[in-house]
Length: 171
Image (cartoon, rainbow, N blue to C red; front, side):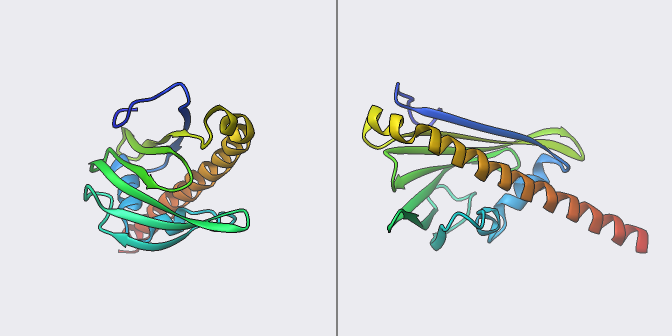
C-alpha cells in the first residue's frame, strides 16, 4: 500500500475487470453524485448518512451506517488521493476494521475500453484471531460485492454508449 505501511496482518484483495468505456468515462461515473449508492449491492444494508465533498477533494468524507449482526456502526471513509481519470483512494478513519484502504484504479486500454481495478488493504480486529475467524467470510463477501459493482459499472457504460449511438444515429 502506498499511503500506509503494510504489516504481516494486512490482507490485500484485488478485483479487476475490463470495461466497455474509456478510463476517463469509468472514472467520471464513479465521481458522480450518488455513485456510491448505485454501486452498493442491495444485500449490503449500508446506508450513506452524510457526505462532505467528492472524490476529488482530499479530506472529504463519507459516513456509512453499516449493520454488524444485531448492531450498527458508522464507517467513516476519507478521500486521501485522487488523480482524475486515473485513480482515487479512500481510507477508513473510523469503523469496524483497524485498517482499511481502498484504491480505485482506471487503466486506459483504448478510446473505448479500459480496466477497472479495486485494491483493498485491510486488517482484522483482534489480529490473528480475527483473521482466522473472519478471513474466508470477508474474502467471499468482498468477491461478491466487487463482482456486483463491476457488473453494474459495465452495464452503465454499455447503456451510455448505446444512448450516444442512438442520439448520433437519430440526428
